[in-house]
Image (cartoon, rainbow, N blue to C red; front, side, top):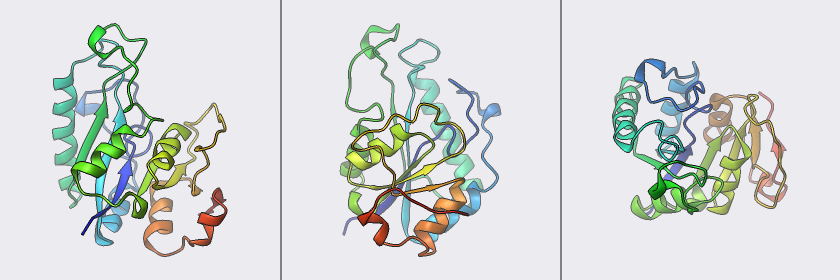
Length: 201
């Protein structure tokens, strides 16, 4: 039987956004994150981070730094009494300085490659899963993967470019708001018929 998952953007969704950061000392989780992650786990969801890391292509840090950061996040999750089930990152950027990473790929959000790869490798039922992020590129990646989607509208989205796949299933202000919708049955399937319904915390 396939599992269901919560796909999570990292910067600006789980932790405060520090551009191109790989320093564990600068990883600060939002206060409501532990309780939200525990609720997701209690409801049987796998927790999977999907993150763009263009700093690799730009030469700011190497892939080993991201692997080390992943190990730190695994430890931090365990300190919250939850397991991180997957960590997928895109190292590419067409404007990068490192030639091998300066390519057009299918894994950089808003493209769906990270989610599709995780779904295949971890045996995830994508249609029973959710993508949560703080910008519409996260929403588009989730929608293109057939997940339901939640936009955390915390001020990080500044462009608001509309498109076929860029309307979230729901909009909230915090990760705990997303958890209420997904896990406490406050979200209604009727929202699927009219995507873009807004939950007010």
